[in-house]
Image (cartoon, rainbow, N blue to C red; front, top):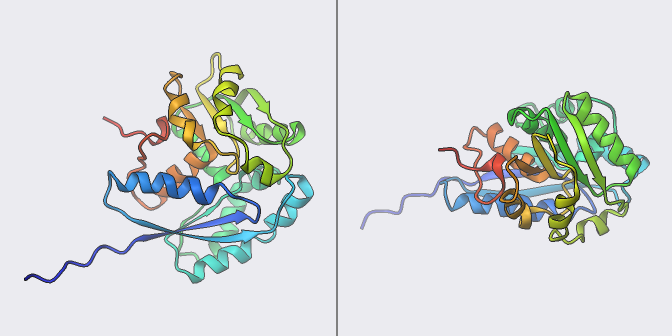
Length: 253
């Protein structure tokens, strides 16, 4: 009998998440488990948390200051990629802050681990799709939603329309029913836009309806979580494909 061939070691996916986040550790693994059905790579998932309960500028600033500690902790686990999985903490800071954050966290991780941010991933995904004008759905209060839209526009992408659901409690954001996005997506003005950001928040659940809504639009439909997976796979040098996760992660002919 031939000895069993050892399986390739799984890639370790590290996440820096708010303490009250309940969505990233379900949606990211769900996407990569779906990918495992069509590609050979396997993944394990590892998190470090930053304290935050209310989505407001003060708590977001305090939370962001903890991200370096989280990067150091994940580096101890020798993760293969590290994702700062809170879009609004970056976008509420200052224009272009995702670059400074990525540089700081890369240094904290020892310089050898690819580090991405959900905020950077979203704007890079828009560029990849050639999207010059988008519409956005976000769970935040209106002033914070405007801050997010201003950040995106500072990156050269026009926000044509935005719907703010005005939920400030981060746990409540995670309890939102993703099925509600079907009706909301039908209400947001997408005339003349190049893409729809269905969830500009990694805490607002959206994965169960991304492909359903994508099928009703002739423009790409993406989310902060989808963009995070897309950018992470590219950072790992892997095919950025996931079944039933919208146009950004669709297989190309």
